Image 1 (cartoon, rainbow, N blue to C red):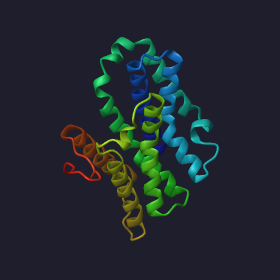
Image 2 (cartoon, rainbow, N blue to C red):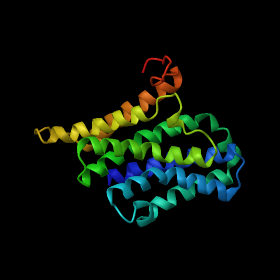
Image 3 (tube, rainbow, N blue to C red):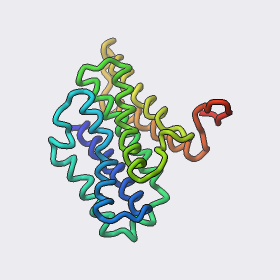
Image 4 (cartoon, one colour):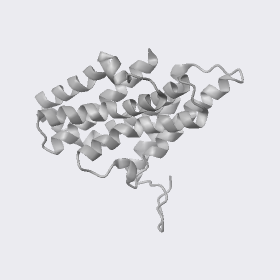
Length: 210
């Protein structure tokens, strides 16, 4: 139940960013719903296909489809209110990133992936929706720009993997605590990177501290 709850919260956060980007791009209602759905479900869809969890949760569970549709319709109906939220797109995106890096990793581990592949899939789950959103909106994906994006997601995923590995040594850490720590680290690092302009090393140039 915890995994589903976090998944739905992540879908909501990403769907809201997709809908807000659609407002910024002056798309019609259909375009807004497409962008909200693709952003909210893209990362999880890729995750499920890669681990063989078919049909993907987005197609097998009505709740996964309902959240982005309701979110998109709410933005379309009350767009003057949501238009004022455009400045928080990055913050909402960071929340989605933190939530999905945990859920993607947990599900990958449940399907028998090793520690490193599971962490990598957690990162893919976290960045996938944002990539789809930005490509559909005609923007350079955030993950390919200088701000730290994928690295915090990978670190959050590695925290989850580390907790699962500790269980083999007799350290039975509670799932909510592990999820909370991983999300806090990912979210905090991402928000600090946005605020302070931290970036990963760039070929042939310098970078800010990460």
